Amino acid sequence: MVVVESQPADDNERQTQLLRGALDMCLLALLAREPAHGYELVRRMETAGFGAISYGTIYPLLTRMRRLGLVADEQQVSPTGPPRKVYALTESGRVHLTAWQHQWTRFADTVAAVLTAPDHSPTRS
Image (tube, rainbow, N blue to C red; front, top):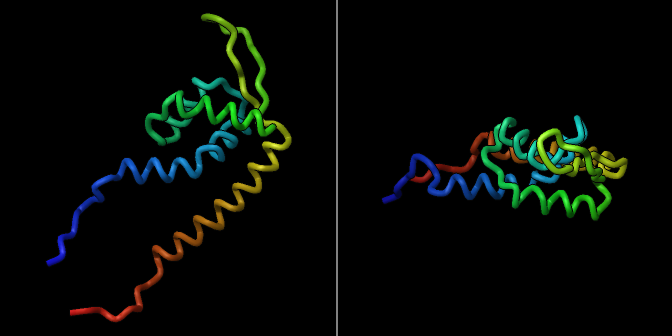
């Protein structure tokens, strides 16, 4: 007997894995629109529909992208507290973002084609 679940047991884990593969690209895309500090990027990701993403995920990724030259940071005065780091896309970041967008589109198109292809395999009784 085969038991079919109505929903995968671990949707959150699947979502986490999908996000892990696209988070750097999404952050670069958000920074391409407008420079932002880490808190603002977390808020933008949540507004975009990604759910709660921790600062402990965003800040190390921003640090890694800064070391790779994809983003630059600048201290800006905060109206409500100490200065904050604002991140902006570099020219190298723009080049990487464009390449990653093309790569993502090809990948997503391939996945969509596999998921929507008619099933021509023989059925078992």
